Image (tube, rainbow, N blue to C red; front, side, top):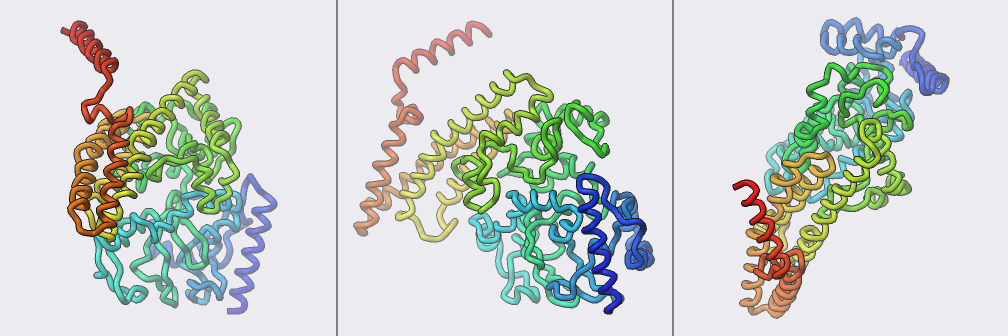
Amino acid sequence: MFMRRLVAVGLCSMLLFSSQAFAGGAIGLKELSPATRACIECHKKENRSLYQQWGASKHYRGNIGCYECHVADPDDPDAFNHYDYTIATIVSPKDCARCHQKEVEEFLGSHHSKGGRILGSLDNVLAEVVEGNHGMITEAFPQGVSAAAVNGCWQCHGSEVKVLGDGKLDPATWPNTGIGRINPDGSEGSCAACHSRHSFSAEQARHPDTCGKCHMGPDHPQKEIYEESKHGIAFFANVDKMNMDSEKWIVGEDYSAAPTCATCHMSQTKNQDVTHDIGLRISWNNRPPVSIRPEVSDAKMGLPGKDVPWTQRRANMKDVCYNCHSKNWVENWYVQYDSLIDLYNNKFAKPGLALYNAAKPLMKPVKFGNKIDFTWFEIWHHEGRRARHGASMMGPDYTHWHGTYDIAKHFYVKYIPELEELIDKGLKSEDEKKIQAAKDLQKLLDEILNSKDHKWFLGKMSPEEKAAREKAAAEFKARYR
């Protein structure tokens, strides 16, 4: 065992030396280590597909094998003895950083690496309580855990991996390649979320389908939006021209037929290096109920991006856009995008959030225990995100029919009537606090509905606007009669 430990230390030192000596270039060992050769003898028989995937990888060409990635310190929480070698099943970002220090540092500063923090969020209440129960009993969860969370939320956001000992990991938390997985060594994230093991292909990570594992569905349909956009249409029509397997992949130089998700958010341009912090080209954070600037959310999470203003991030993204679009095109598009964010924030999000908070004294104090909880949640979390993400990626159908149309429909025909029901019930209550809360809510609702954005709903559209709309309708009919 002492000799095995010396081998591990020696290999790690060699890898560290290689990463320093060849920073930004080739990384590798002179030949396969004896430990990796021993691994191969068994695994090429027992796990033929994994052996072949590794054989097609850059790791193979650099003589980086099983042992170099899976080697563990005996004191590591998930370390175990495997045929006299001390290894760990999980290869964490901390392990990858032995050679890929720059990439890991960038990733750890991103929102991706913090995805596992959903475990204490409002969204997880749905999967843990509303949708789930305590029916999944495991050694690490003797009181039970929700299978809805285990198989749903945790598989994209990441689980907190629980170690049982002797190399075994709790089945509620493993297998898991969630982007923000909380690893036994304390690191956050999973490089394999995008660079699937054991080929760790850059080509695969560049493909939109890879991002689509998580970025799809009713609340963040970026994959579907991309597919309906001109960007996605161009990509799927010209995928054979994208040069996806090129070692050097610079937009406007190595390919120009279309952008992918990676092109815009991560990949190299003539002026920018590759980045693994996917927030450094985003000028709005559209995840919360009200869109905010990304440096604000980075500051809340203690991320280094707090010092990078949205104006710099927008300049970073424009640098990508200019490879295919003129300056006027890009500037005008951002005017359109910002206008949609302004519309959503000021017409629906800020008033809706204020009304929801004012209504809380009239509601049952149980999260998702009221009909209006679901209504408001879907307005901002589903429909509001769809509208904002649709506009950010030029998907008109998601911006309108799946976005602003659904927001408006549910705001006026569901949300407001449900607020009025709470007001009516509160006024009829014998509880003075509820009566006052109902009066306060009614006053706020009246103020909002009588504002310029909503007074049409009360039949109070100004005569000037009404006349202009009637004129436009007449002209439309005359043109297409």
